[in-house]
Amino acid sequence: MKKIKLRIIPILIAVITVIFVIPAHATGIPRESIPDNTPQAAVDVAESYIKDTLVKVQNGLGYADAKGETNRILFNAFLNNKTGGYSYGLLTIIANNAMFECRDMYLRPTVYAEYEAQMKILLADLITAVENGTMIYKDAKKEAYTRVYKSVDPGYDPSDRFLVDFCYWDVISVDGAMFNRARKVLLDAEIKYQAYQCQICAN
Image (tube, rainbow, N blue to C red):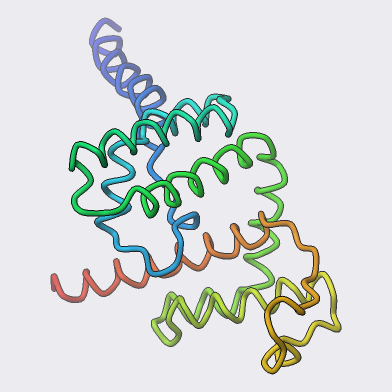
């Protein structure tokens, strides 16, 4: 009995450690919040400065307070030439996007869970195509956005916009969380494809 207890104690310690450590390290900038064509190195720089604030946001800190805190941190880093050559403007866009979406997820976790389940069904073939490498993420995202719009308004036709100036577009009202979850499931598929490619290379 004593031996069993001695075996269980380290396991319990490990489980407790995981429970408390994972939330602290699961606060990186969500990939789905990163603006298109943003260099990964710029994301890494921004993340290094805002990670503590992201923890606060995921624990209830408001967006305005978080934005003010990170803007100050990033501005000071920029003034001291500690941003790896990336501009204050770019880094704040990365930071603000991440905090806005993390704050929204904190406020509406059920909504995000429901949308993610919905996107997995709506975009099932696109997810599979990205996982298999037969479609790149950029193309899949474009098609996904069209499907999201059509799920709200079946009459939506993106071709109607090609010859019309952007300021005249009749934009359908869609919850941004739907696009967030669409990006997430497709990015998850891209990660699976990349992992599979790495496994092939390793073998």
